[in-house]
Structures are given as structure tokens and as C-alpha cells.
Length: 411
Image (tube, rainbow, N blue to C red; front, side, top):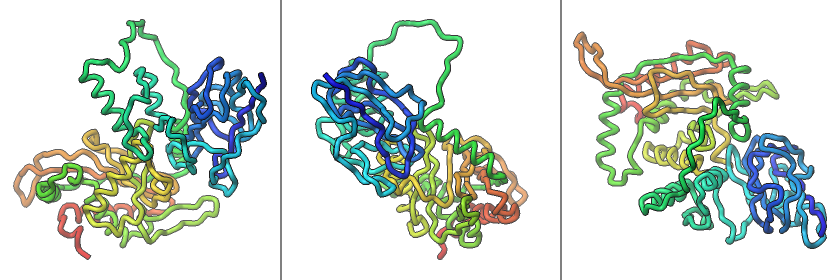
């Protein structure tokens, strides 16, 4: 018997340390080579690490939420044969140009390079693994429709639904237990990163909020008319692509809002193309997938792109470029949109536009009371670089286009 020390590899992108997000093993477990041992979270990605050897787990580096330096001992194994204390020679390109041991990347904010994985391994996201453990589901029984048989969130949900319909519970019901007075939840992983970035945004950016009421009766009529001609429900339009087109037209006159701030160099980078961020709620937390060069897309193409990147963010199949590089962001709470919201700017951008719930209510038009479909746009701007007048003027421009939707499509 001998000990094998599995050290935390270089996960790329210049990472010098990583947070333990989740363990899939415990001290005393027998592990087979290539078994997934846990997930490490960097500022760029959630990365699943596989065991380089077979053996018994003697020691773990810490608990979820603890920080481990690159090169430090992560897991200590007891093995049958002697092994070196360095990771195996298989390598994948790392973001900083160095080579990193083979790991399987699971996207959380930006993915790192991904090495080929054995077909005998179940490929899925950390969120699906966690749900499978909670429900007592054997992931090897779940058919995967993703690349290489990867199990997507939709695959997992469909399997759970089939089990329920078949009368086979996903897991035995737990015995009734007393309700605890309180529960402590450690802030780790993607939730920690979200908290840090939101805090930094509010701390460093003087937010200027502006809300405008919009009559979208004609826009909704156009949307329903266009959708009536689409046989595929997945191709039907929401309000978001109309807002996206109107925003891109408005940015021609207000380019200071399609800008990112490089605080390290104290430089504003004013962008020509519009790389549209779409704030998306996922099982792992809020992500902002990006539709690059959105200004070149038609209404249907933009709608499809928004749906594609949002779905990829939710099922952790998004590519690196789909989760970085946005220049301005739109956000929508859908049916939960409320009357007004105060969206937080997605650093290093300087503006964000939020869609609230649309409701029918009586308004006065040409001296007559009539029922119209009304919706608020809630926006926030970085007041250091966008003056209040310009912010209001840009939202007014968007309002005019949405209230007269034919103007959205003018050259």
C-alpha cells in the first residue's frame, strides 16, 4: 500500500486558487480511476475533477466553501501500487497558455478547456448530480441527448417525470422529522460569486435608475399576429427580441450606453457592435449569456439566439464565448415582473434595461378612457459616465419605437 496525493491542478485563466464547491466522495470511500471526486469553483467556471487513480480516500483538503491553492493537496488516496504525487500526464490547454491536467469543465460563468472523457462516465452538470443524489436516482439510467451522451437538465427532468408517471417514485419518501428552528446555509460556489459581483457593482457604481411607462397594445397585436403564422411553438416571439431591436436602434444615437469601463486602465471602451447580455435565472443562480453582434440579426434570428443562449446557460452547455463579452444587458422577470424593479448593472457595462409585467388597465387616449396594455421599462445607468438626460432620452427613444412598432424595422 502507498499514498497518492492528488494536487489541485491549474484550472486555466491564470487561476491561483479555487473554492471547493462540492464533494462527491468522503473519507473511507473506495474510488475508481476517472470517477468524479468533486467540483471546484473559480471566478470563471465550475470544474469537475476526476480521480487519477483507484484507491481509498484517506483525506480531503477541506469542506465546501474552503479555498485551496493550485498545487496544494486536494485528495489523499491509499493505493495498491506506488504512484507519483503529481497528476497524470494527460493535458488540456489552459487559458493562460500553460498546460493543465485533464479535467471536465462544467460551465458556471465561463468554461475552461475540456478534455475528452471516457464514454463509461456519466456526463452531466454538477446541478444534475446534486439533484440525482437528493432524489436517489442512478444517473447511468438516464438517457442523455447532449454531445457524447451528456445528460442535460431537460433529459433529467423528463426521466423524473417518466418515473413519476410509471408509479415509480424517484426516491423513497423521507420520514417525518421535526422542523428545525433555523438552518444555516453556507454561501459558496456560484452564489458566492454572484454575491461578490453584485456587492461590487452597487459599491463601485453610482446607479441612476429611470422608469418609463409604455403602451405596448400595438406591439402585442403585432407579436400575436406574427406568432399566429408560426407552426412551431419554439419559434414564437416574446417581447424581448422586440426590445432588443429597439435598443440597438437607440444605441446608434446613444453610443455612450454601449460601453464598458476598464477600471484598471481608467478607460471607457465604446463598442461598435452590440453584444447583448440576457440575464437568465438558472438552477445554479443568475447568469448572463451573450448574443454577440446582435445588431446584425433579424427579429426571428435574435429571438432564436436569445432562446438558444438562455437554454445553454440553464443546462450548463454554454460555450465560453456565450458567457462573456456583453456590452449592455437586458433582463426580464417574465410574469413575475412586477410594476417596477431596480436592475443591478452587470460590470463592466454601464447600462441595463429591465422588462416588467404587462397589464391591461384604463388610460386616457385623445380625451377618452380606454383599456390599453401597459408595461414599465426599468433601467439603471452608471451615473459616472451616462448623464441623467441622456439615459432618459434613450429610454424615451425606445418607448417611441415600442409604441409604434413599425419604426423598429426602419433602416
